[in-house]
Length: 209
Image (cartoon, rainbow, N blue to C red; front, side):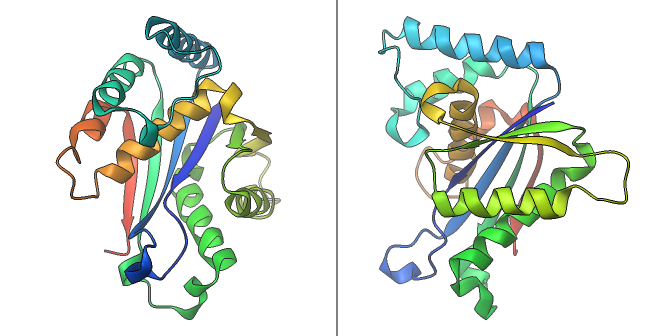
């Protein structure tokens, strides 16, 4: 089992000064390694079909709307699922959320606790070029919290840090996370992208309501 994670937004609580209203984490899960390889190859082929440079990195926020739709439509036939957590910062009242470490730790705990019953000896891949603080907190959380020392089974087998520029499936996680985050906004295309991959959605929690 392979798991790829990405986040969108920021942990800042100064909403009136430009901090994002929401913080979103998406977890893309492939149960079958061969299916993951096939999706990886399709993304590589898509890059060549569009005549992008070999090292071009797919980012939701850097693609035109039509290309976002085409990308998601191209990968949607492959057998993956995704989990998501969207944190509504407007309703966070506890003083601990004013601190980045506390915020990130809680975001990590929400998404993994939701997915934990479905994870089995998973290899988790985290973007090494993303938010350093989020990455640090996520790795710490995985090592301390997810694997129950009293249980003979392990939800998480291994954690890897990789560069998303060289990993098509981390780029897929970015696109899924972007689609999910956009669906909670007010732009005219808010529902366009999530709708394409809705059949791959296993669980999305909007917290707190």
